[in-house]
Length: 308
Image (tube, rainbow, N blue to C red):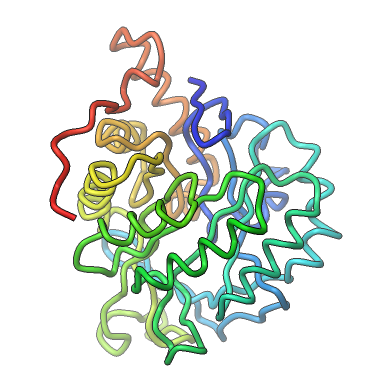
């Protein structure tokens, strides 16, 4: 079940996604974190963030909407209080990083670079750039190049860029990440949800505290597969697939689309053991199908490149 990409070696290709797994340590009493292929921490910012007021989650018929607001303790508290315990784990720990201007990313990356215990960094580019009119970093290839290039200069560890799905064609954005030094890309982040007055209400009929929310879960899986397949065709660096993965068969679909690994997110909210269960189901699929290695599932032959 071992996979290798971008300088990382994972015991299996199933990773707990950022924003759905806390800092990882919260799950120690529930499962053996050492069995995970990897885990991605909550997004880390330069300063602590309180997040949005509640309610922060709303269940939909085929997933959920979230408006957490990137609550986190800040990079310094993470390094001081969380990372020493994470560093002792026998799994790949990936730190997710976000900011509201390029300088934020640079400083968080710089501080993590000097710490021990983080195997790789994942840049969340779905945040608004407050210095350029609030445009989301991930919605402008030039900003992707700016942030990724700046982070690359500070980072010797594998650098993963997490892309937004809220674009017309993912290829130029994937190209921008690759051209500016990313070792891999991960996608997709959440889709922009419906209007809060119509869909983003919790069981009590309240709208989400942050207004608009991000849609995740089975509702986005088909689109996520399409975007992952497109990205695989567009770039040479590895692609990590995310979006509505609930079972081993879903993970297989992403690997067959060319992803080298998958991240499990929303499923963790209703099944705390989802990541380990999916890894076991994937192993069973390989055994029953006569595959000597999970790597045989991954589409490695690049099709004729699509137009850029």
